[in-house]
Image (cartoon, chains in turn cyan, orange):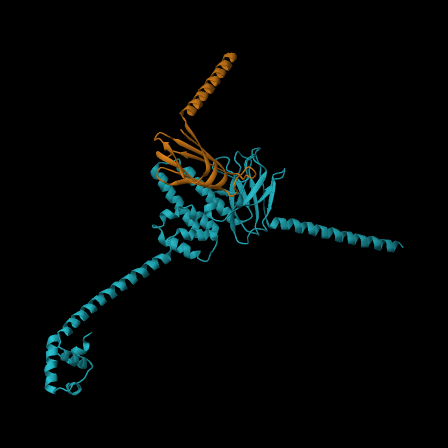
Length: 343
Length: 140
């Protein structure tokens, strides 16, 4: 009896342990799945901010400082402890540029503040497998400083942003000549990052801030190599860039058109001389009599004096006499030259 | 003796505070501030606001605040050499009426030390915009 009770007790214990193990596993898998694919963070806010975080998709670099409700793809509330969370499952599998922003209380959700202590946004790269953590430090500014972890390209993006900001900030200390020098150095530095970065968006972000449009002529080979390096990237970011560069195909087209014009002119010149000769020959032929023209046609057909004499029923000496007149009127010395005349 | 030292210290502190307050006040008086407010009512005409910066200006502060109900507005800031110093765009696709309204807000603040002398340009490029833009510039 006691043995049976022990067995029952043991069975219950095993079932309970199993249920507990299953529940723990379920909780764990839920929590890990949340951790693996999410954009989350902790923000410390002033009372001026609405505790809502908005996530916007930035399809091109031109749209980085564009705000509309259509760009906002998700929003989430910040809880009382400052935590927020977006699932990144709905994001595209390829890396894209995103922006999170907050709005002031009483301000519309689609609010963009650029510069100053109230700058309300940051940019980052993510995809549907991203697990990104964002946090700020209690300060007089919302995102200055902030920390972003979980996806290494964002670290580089932040370094570039800092570099640009630092360049702008340092510039104000110098005179105009030194400013120009500092700008040039900064742009070279950004182009170097663009050249060496293995991530397309990071690379383009650096290039876009290096004022590449104004230095295109100075660094043509760099840009040609750059475009060649990323020629297989068909993202909207690269499409936007390619439009800005003068196309290589255009140069080729220019050459084709040039060669075409050259050949056309050559043809025109040849035709001109050919026609000139033909006109001259026609004028000379007009000076021949009817009989001489008949003999000329037969001579051109390669017939002998005898054959012409038989065909026209005239004497051989008459043929010879007409032939010599034809030679002198046309200015030729032999039958061969008659064959070369173009009519 | 101690009392007189305390008294002198207090007087010195008061004097320092008074001088500092006067200096701050002087700084405020030196600033040249200009406020502009522009209203768009379905307009698509580009507006250029020129801000003349004198050689003596050590700092330029530009604050642009815009709220639109409909349309697409681009704001650009150019220095006298024609270099773009900042820009932003806002768009509201809903055609506002009494029953529905969608506001979009864009704000930009720029602090420029030792600004280039000449005409700085704030270009407003609206496309069927209904909304307001307020510009505040200040030079010191």
